[in-house]
Length: 227
Ligand SMILES: [Zn+2]
Image (tube, rainbow, N blue to C red):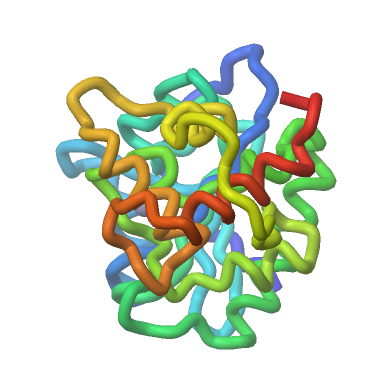
């Protein structure tokens, strides 16, 4: 179910296609989230296309053909400032490292994302990202408890097979091949942590251990020549 809840915080798209889907958690309960994302009087106005409540109810704040302001300073695949080319979903959760996402909410999220990807075919699987992937060191949402693997098995985003072999080549270069784009001044270790938050949430320490290397190798494998 989608409830219309228009926010005044949006702008025109550019002529670039929408090709990135960014997932967030709100850090706040539903009502406060809707209020902030619709407030045009505060400094640093913010918004998102959708807010998804715990019970799976989706609120539409900004039409997909307008730019919402959810990503802030952000980087992916060599590009920056990703609001203009992305769709943003804010998922109600107070802290995605500490609180599980309810099954009803995830089922609704899968339905919502499936529709978005169908409407914007340029959103290829590795362009389904968390805020933490595109704003390393600055953001940790949607958090370590976010079920990326469940989404990937529903065709939304990628989940690595453990390749069983070490990564061939430099880890940081591999991260960049996948899409991680290190902002100036952010230490390499923070980019490794962003990768682990998404793909190896059991241990987010920024250390390139053998499992982390095998997972990145597994992730790069199916991309083959399409990079
Ligand atoms: Zn966020």
